[in-house]
Image: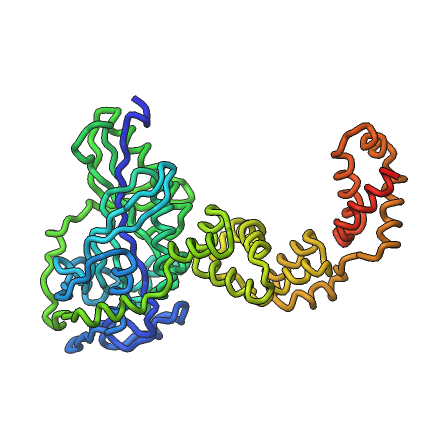
Length: 479
């Protein structure tokens, strides 16, 4: 049997850190990157006699996420203790939610090769993050940093509706975009504020019974998630084809070797011995509270995409790419206010900016320049001050050392050559050096013109006005 004889079933548990200024049960700050154990207090260190107090902003952000993902919001919810050995959570249990989550039965719609598909969301609940262990290879031990302990999370649990890595990536990107747009999380994957536990199982096509699933924990890059799922699918199929059974277990993905390794047997709900947290009051929400949050939800990705199609006449593909990130979308809208050229701004984002982001594995939130600088770059090209090829160099400078584009071109001597006599001199020089291209053009080979223009651009290091070059070459060749 081959892989085509099997169906893949994937469910995701996405953890997203909320952008509150303080932790979920105390007033310690949540700033990323602070020195170890400098953002802690007796409550998040679980000192005896301390009591947690729920941060109301956490409820608001979770309800926002629920409404933005079409969930039903529970007016009667509570916090539960999830008992589990956490070496980096001093209480030795996590405050989470079990049978009464804040949000239930939602969905996110994704684009697939076969059209739109709804991925159902089972629940969204709030919980606290754990600390972080720093393993000391030289000392043979581990050091604990509790700055992250108590940072508020929402966990978004999907139904097992995903059937491929393409669907997984589409779902995660859509979910990430929604959370960015409603401004409840910065979703910085490299900082762990948007990460996923991936549940994978396979079954023979036509078999109604689900296969045994394995779970890969805390994955925080789309590339790693895609590679891990592909590996795990092949591993499980190979086990089944050999007549063996897949074991239900928690796995660790190793990005270097490209393999999964067993961490422990997979726990079920009963293993956690959930019970209501006796130190925290029940969460009661009024209709008015929920509706007030609903009314104040910002424009979501799908709505913004439709507006771009109608208002700016973007293609569906381009609108999808731009609205997939709030940061790219905001850059687009604000740059248009500067240069009033939506098509040009769109082209720069879709082509060069996206290329650099992909090559550097940079998240759009990390783009170092602002919309004003991008808008000014477009204006300089529109006015003919610089060519598009020089514009690409200016953009690279903006990524390296962001500053005013006009200052960059003056510093680098990149102002476009648009003087007619200078252009004619360049054209004459190139024609004299390329008699074969002249013969080719006169023989009807139109590509010869493109070659000559290219040689002139190379000669001037991209500074010659390409429109004027074309016109001058045509005039000389046809004359």
